[in-house]
Amino acid sequence: MRRSRAVALAGLVLTALVISAVPAGATVTGPCDGSATWPDAKPPIEVVASQLAPGEVVIIPLEGDVSWTGAIAIPPPSEARDTSGNVKVKVPFPVGTITVGTWATSGTKVDNSGTYEYEFPSILSGFEVTVTGEHWEGNLSQSGPPTCSGEVTLALEGTNPIGFIAGGLTVVSIMGVYLAIRVKGPAAGGSKR
Amino acid sequence: MRKQRGRPIMAAIFGFLTGLFGVITLMAFGIIPVDSFLVTLLPILLMIVAFALAMWAPIGASRAEPPPSPPMTEYDTL
Image 1: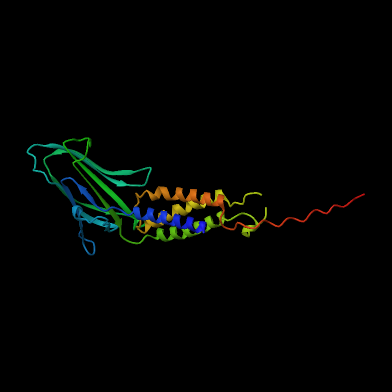
Image 2: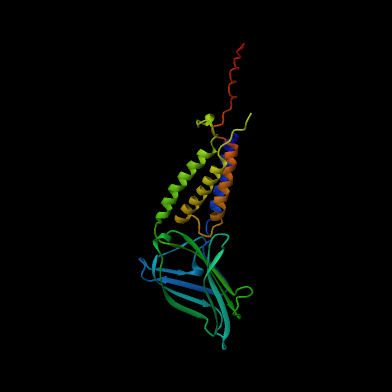
């Protein structure tokens, strides 16, 4: 009885851990917004950061052209001012984050846009990655609290074969644990040493 | 009486592998994001749990005392 309670408790703890790990989706703070459009996707995908629902994961194609825009809702300055920022990808502890892009310029622009061509290997499909962005007005050194910051969870479309292989290896490992936690010797049906 | 137990080192290794392959499975099917704390925590947690279970050895332990061995017969050699 005590043993089954311990197993049930362990199951509850693991379930709570998995539920609490569900991604938070997109968040944007500050007077900024951004969008991305995949016109060649079937059907075409259009994502506006500020309009994503909490917990929503954006599924994007493995390859293609993405048209992006970014803007800050401030009056266009008459003189050039310093701006800076970065885009990072979150990875597990202890690495934390990987910076994939930075900017530090002076100018009068309050928006920007462009087209970016990319191609990811299919081995990455299915993985959910959290991408963050920060923008500073008035400095080139990314110091102090950012003027704007945002976060979005992306997943590459498709099913990953690694998932099935890792699932099979998980089952084999569980069997290994089961055999290892059995009592050694004749009581467990094992051999005498 | 000697305490019955399993194989703690083997259990710890298989516990770690269970956690490692488990989180890869969860990530590949998009159940948890790549930056989830579970990616680091689960293999270590399962390694410790499996090690503790092997020390406790709840499976296959005999409840009854083993039957006493028959007394040695002594022969008078003289």
